[in-house]
Length: 152
Image 1 (cartoon, rainbow, N blue to C red):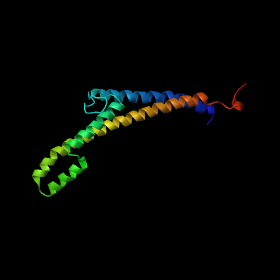
Image 2: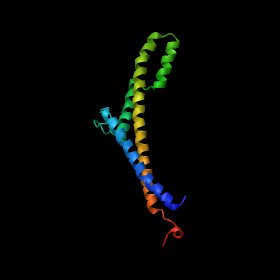
Image 3: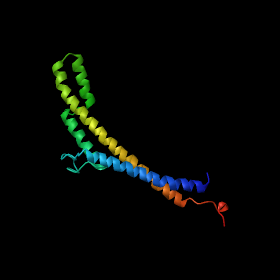
Image 4: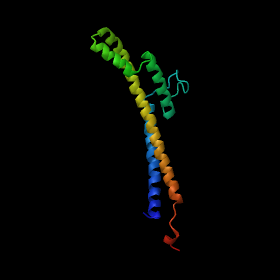
């Protein structure tokens, strides 16, 4: 591929990637804002701020982990589920019922945390996409046609 063609492709790819990354960032932010989530007061930082970006989403996910562990008595969903299965298989209906509510609550917290982490990851991908777009533009601007191929 000649330098002229490479430069043209890079000039086309750059703005396209920047636009796609920016559009993704916008959509992620709009969808997070639509959920009307605020960072919990227990967060070490950003308390009360709307979850509308990667930093606030990460902060809220961290608080949710703390709360889920507190609800589960320091146990993870997997540990609580294992106890629930053992109680169910042993016929201990009382213990299984006791664990069931905790298990459901911790599972929901984990699902919400996973959703927030997915948005954080999506922000990273959109930022990477925009960065590659900027690099494409920069590379296009410094790519030169060899002297022998230039017309004088």
